Length: 379
Image (cartoon, rainbow, N blue to C red):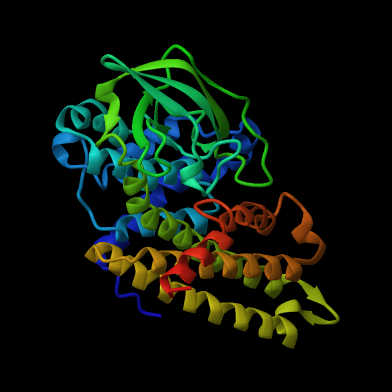
């Protein structure tokens, strides 16, 4: 189906970023899975490609501002090639916008060049051991002491926390449940900052996930992003883009799963014919294709709204909910069509299946998306 959100420039960038991924990532996924992280050289290669600078003005080392279509094609290429990029997407699609939107001139000059080049990876720390999607329950505290904040607490399940040189931390600066939250930037070489061991996950093993700990970590007040007490407002303003990014990846992975399964069923012979020639296979794949095209249309419409600056949070929630649920259905059905081969870790569909499960959880679970949508309906 024709996609109005993309043009020739986007497709040229697709080809360029696809080439970078083929050269620097495709052959190393198993190695990175075993290591539990991606190497610094990969991040710098993506910085050189221009991916990390799409939101950043040239005066700060970037190539932007560029519209969201350029990130869309990057995530689509990663899914097509089977490259796990949760850490990368967190850096550029989730964290960078906070520096761009809420950083002052001094902060932008200090941090954005490294972020754009990939020499300084950035992560965001919201979730805590007892707090997930309920941001108002955050307890990690920053107490003002003269020209410094003193931070104590911990964060859980932080994507990219192992490789990050900068972490945007959501801290509590007053007792107001929502109005008492503030964003601060913590350099990971600060005394008192520490990381737990990398967490072993069902999938997306090459994207590191760790717990973070803050014990009397002192940072300058100048490390605060935006105004004190405005974090909840800032976070909710960017969650729509984060959720759209997850939806983009979900649709692209679904499409890749169907392509992989078409190839497999056309070569797999049984009962004197190919698996693809059987009516059940045709019906399953045709039904999945229709759902993926519907999801693509929803994602593209949301992307057009984001580019126009009018993406409604409820519409972003609808896109994430629908597209990740479709993804779950598609990869499950495609693995089933692979039979026993699909249960082997060495197969591409197995990796897609394992990597896909978390998309219905992170960035706000499917249940949280339904709460947001219901509220928009006056329920």
